[in-house]
Image (spheres, rainbow, N blue to C red):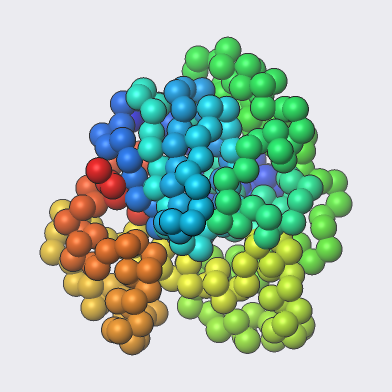
Length: 278
């Protein structure tokens, strides 16, 4: 598959890691996706996309148009159509907040149709995007759409969440939440409330996801993996804790994960932690 992405111009870059086009024939149809420090917008220009929650009580979903996806705290399964034609946005964990008029908790661990968030917009956007063959034009159009929807006045507390979240991003989650609250001049409970409002989860949970992302993105499937060393570098100083969290986030032990994950393809997005589920 071909991945073409770009970082948007300021001020969008404060909230978005990249805007991208993904097209072609997937090497694997179904992917097992662990939690990653991002929220997403997908516009689907191809066949139906199917998704499964790792929670067996949650029914699967099928999307033909597009969907928003908040921060996920557990793994899910994603089945590509063939061929793939997707346009997407990788938001920072707090980045979706100024673009949607709904609590972040309502998007946590959920897939929500675009029209449920941006009323009666998905057909217009898909039609505009669908008429643009070059990826550069598609990315420019979506960037303009996002710029038009960026709230003029930031929501209460978003600046503080953005600053604290930026520190978690910079240090890969290796910052005590108490230190974040102290640096911001607020209580830990107040910081947690603001994070739930703008991210959907607490700063402690965001830190866990950043820490896991650092570990999983450090794996080079082409070389022998020193799991103990990677775990310590990522901030896991308790081997039992690392093993439990790895199994919780991926559904596999580290050895099983390495056996199933394929080497990252050049040009794929930052969250290259998915592995084949078929």
